[in-house]
Length: 239
Image (cartoon, rainbow, N blue to C red; front, side, top):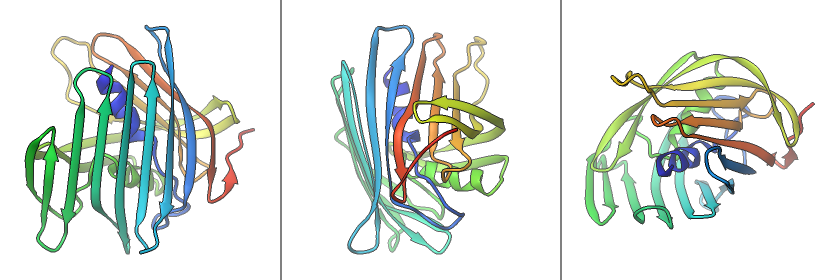
C-alpha cells in the first residue's frame, strides 16, 4: 500500500499547453484502496516563484497515512532542470524523509535519504521523483508512444519506462473527459503476478492527470480520480 501511495503522489502531475510551456494549476483528487474500507484525498499545485523558478507541491492524506512532497525546477529552453526535492511521509510503515539539491554547475546531486548521505553524479536529463512526470506529460502531448527517464533513486538512479496504449473517455466528478491512456513498462515477474500502473491524461486540459490505477503483485488495487481542478485559472470541465 505504501508503494502505491508513493507512486500516486508522483503521478498527480502537471498540465502543459504546448511542449515547452508550463502553466500554473491546482487539482484535488479522491483516493480509494479497493480491498480496504478507507479513502483519502490529495492536492497538487504548481506556481511560479518570484525568481522565475517553478514550485510543484503535493499533499496527500488517508486514514493511516500522510505525505508531503515539493520540488523546485527551472525550464531552460526545452529542458526541465530540477533544483531541489523534499519529501516526508508519516503514519504508514516507517517514516521517511528525503532532501536533495541538484547542482548543475558541479553536476552533483547531494542531500540525505532516510538519514543516509546522498551523492549522485548529475547527468543531463536526470530528474527527481516529482519532476519526471512533467517530462512524461510533455512527451505524451507531443505524440510520443514510448518514453524513458533517468530518476534519482536513493544513492543511485533508475530508469522509468512508459508507453502509450490508446484513447479512452474517463468519467470524473467534473464530467466525461477524453484522455490518453499510458502504462508504466516493467520487466515481467517470474511468479506471473506483475504490477500494473495505468494513467489517463486529459487531451483537452493540458494533459493533466485525471485518473490512476495501481495493482500490486498481491492483487491489491489502488485508484485515484480527479475531483476538481483549474489550469491557468480555468476550471476543468468534462462533457
